[in-house]
Length: 429
Image (tube, rainbow, N blue to C red; front, side):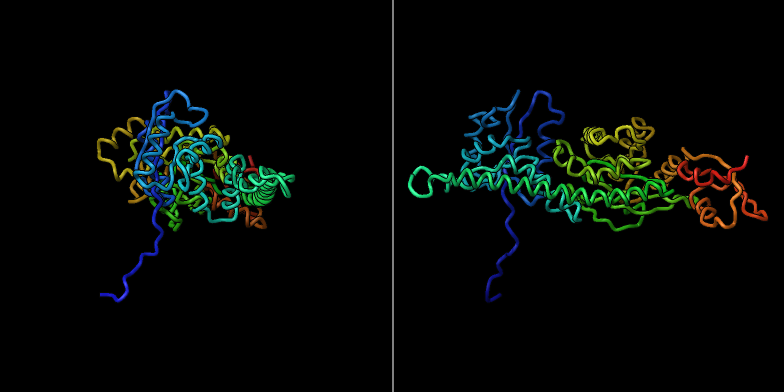
């Protein structure tokens, strides 16, 4: 027996109560939405100990939920010894303040947006990712600044020295001004980062390589797909928003044609608009792609709603009309009947397992076909001094004929549309 008992040093997970409202026009069933909220809470390090729900036509202006439910929530918080209450919908600053007073300190009241911002803060790794998260967090915090200097405001009621300066109000305004200045500074920094990203993106656009972007619901397996396809080791975990920062890898299609594939931040239902705005530079990788792979978790019973959520975000960022290919991932978790059902309902989609590699050849073949769909047929006599151009044709084109002449190489090839203009001066009939 140890002389001194071991004391655990790991922090105790916060005990959370989830609150959801069933609206008349709910896009998702309430229990499924709360299931997802619980997974988000778990990702943030909380343990869900209870749920509370109510059916409403519209939220109560003061308390969001009814007064009876507020009383029920207060009792539940004390019985379950909860540390935090998480609402599945957005709260206004005044609603959050009212609920905090009703429940009492030190219990926190947060909403889905605050929870997602917290997770993003935990997982952002690059400088750009951290800047984007800080910007979204401060924009969320600004209208919620209140009461932090109330002890100074109380001094005003006593009269006498110091009561004529309005310290509480002044300090609150100072805080707001500081946050606004910080927001402005973050936007300037992000602008500089975006300019550098634009330069990198421009070089990729001018590159002859076919550009593919992965888009999909969070935890659909995008990073695992990227790893399976390219042999890379991008972080892949069974957690929501495990990766936030875009990752680009190179890949050669059969025949040697170059391709880049970019993994982007995952989407989610009720994705806060502030985050969409903050991450627009990251999501611009989707806008610059020749092909978007919409990755869907085929084993999730809500896969159709998830696909709709992805389409909504793509529309919001202006990528709704881009060329897309739907990839149903995790088919290793489906039986033969379910697979047949997917093939019948989505004949143009690819069934794939990033975990086992099943369907990989089909996926690569479909990408290659999409890459070749816009190719142009041309013939050209390229001088030997243009060795780099000859190499480019070999690497990015499908060579149909090659003949070595005295002054250069005569080629007939199918080439990507963006390469063809480089050979314009050497075209032959």
